[in-house]
Length: 168
Image 1 (cartoon, helix red, strand yellow):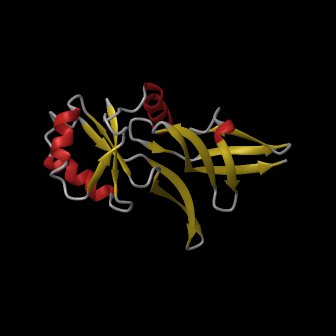
Image 2: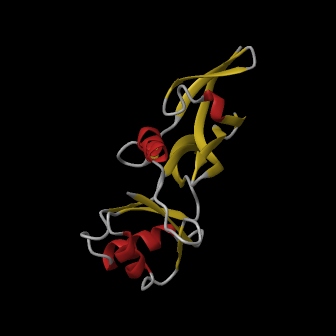
Image 3: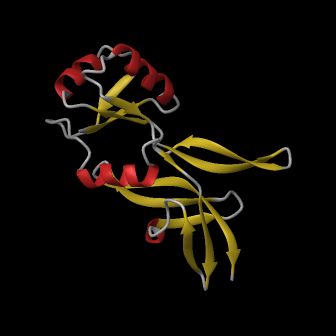
């Protein structure tokens, strides 16, 4: 089961490393941060950069949530595991499938490429292909798109890389 751990924004990497070093692999199967790729232009050239897809959250895979929760309480900077007041809720199966399809085994949402035809976005390659309905807004200059997806039991906005190569 996958669980979402809320941490202080900007401390995701440090918290992931602390969890991996202080919690046994028998309890914590995997700890990861989903990223997205975007293009940044500096020194006259475009460069791929990785940014955190869901700032303030890390993901944990475990079958022993009670033990994990007890171990996390010992980790400095731990905020909470998402759920309701009574239970620690795992991500829904469709949310797990979405993250795996969207970011792959490396948990990195790669750049997508598309075109605009008659004011309609058509993504030809990349993880946004077929998910054009999720796109709320595009920023052609920064080569990225703001999408809205259902995650953590609610609608969430996220930024992903999208290069529009042609507009007709």
